[in-house]
Image 1 (cartoon, rainbow over the protein chains, first blue to last red):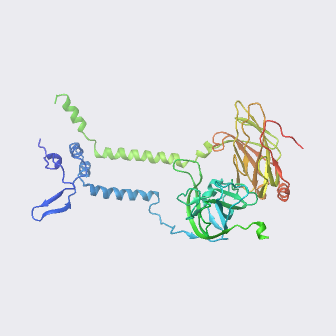
Image 2: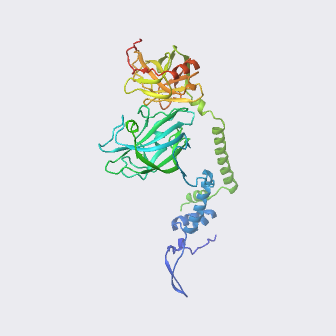
Length: 256
Length: 211
């Protein structure tokens, strides 16, 4: 029985010229990198001894080619999860006052932005701070009640200096969402009812009150999480943003 | 190499025919496809996990796995007077429902409730907030008197049914009481026109005082 002999690095025990600078006999030194087989010599030797042509040819491929093939396979696999779907969200719409907007599961109508240092039923974390209130009409447009945690994610502030709350990816969430008529926290938000509320944000009193604030509105989608099978309103995404004027709140006595 | 090792090595190097390998791979793939079809073609998960609904009417005592539950006559208004805090107003109507809980076997703190409105929508009742049910721990053999309050639009009142259960997060595979509150459009009209505060006393082991 004859045995084929190979003069590959695996057979000779030499390392492939991967990444080395090589000298061409005619052109002298060059910086071209020579790409050799990606697999270690031991693994390639085992593939040869197994007799599998497929394994041998795969393991003989250079790393660059394996990387290209792997990337193509990975991109093709994303098609199964919507990778080839057309991207329709091409930017944020502009938020304006007194215009109802649908941000599931709510319809929000932002009316005005005001600031005040006193608010019955609400306590500032530091004396001298102030409340920024985004006065809004809230309707739950779904067919079931929604807890206030989802509502707080639906409207946030952006680029306002001195806010006490910690900013997240979607801006700074409200400290509270208070029903105007009685000052109670709005939760749950029941369907079929229109609530007049104020999204309340606490601002450091050493920072001057803003003349305008950037308001972001987020919509949610109904579904389950990758780890939590409970269905709920998830994945808030900003769909509107607008710079709205802010002014000091006018009390009933001032108005009179 | 000994004489006994040689045949063993030869046997180890014998590769199955390509047709057999392909056939085995196809069989594995086919088994995966059949398994997926079997588990997804028959949507029985929701039915298997559904709660055991015990239906009744106002005044009935429902025998649940964990408690005996009695729902009394609801009252309503546009203004609620909770035990703690200021008066609460609603753009709809408040429903206040007395609920008596008698735990079975061990102390139980019922936490789940929701109102199935006559308009087909579901109204959340949480353990805190504006629409709440917080009866606290009921001891076995000792009736616990609680109230539940929920705000709804007037069109949800007529035909409303109340659901009460043990776990606020998960009602699967367990008993849930569903009580027809016996409400009509006349109740909705009367309550949405009234602003006399309706009381929602805190839960207690002592029976409520009736005026």
